[in-house]
Image (cartoon, rainbow, N blue to C red):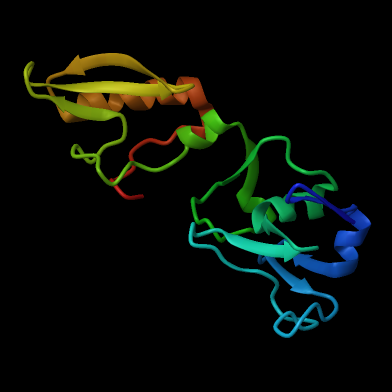
Length: 176
């Protein structure tokens, strides 16, 4: 096990010597005492202010979901890890999937500041019409303008499904 610039480099065997992981619950437990609060059999890690859980291994904080991926697949994820049910501390392996940054953002919920309450839809005050737009790779793509919010939402849903498949996030209320 070695630490390089705050990046954990640990062998799969070493990880399994330190921690056990239950893929049904997503919980890591210490296999041996690692400090005053990290007792053998105790749950490893702590909630982070971001809502994710982190575990400190060899002095390096690691996101629990990335550690779970490594534990099960014997390799670090190549991209980001997406929580399918959007629950940030639900690290069951069945709830985790690799995703590019773009796909992970596509699957995020509707922003809390979305006044329309529907993802990808906004009101155009001057034209008095509902606008549907989608973000791809940091660029906003105009889908169309519509007389009703429902029509704009449907247009967004169709485009999102075509572009993002199972990562499409549609019909989400603001804050989800």
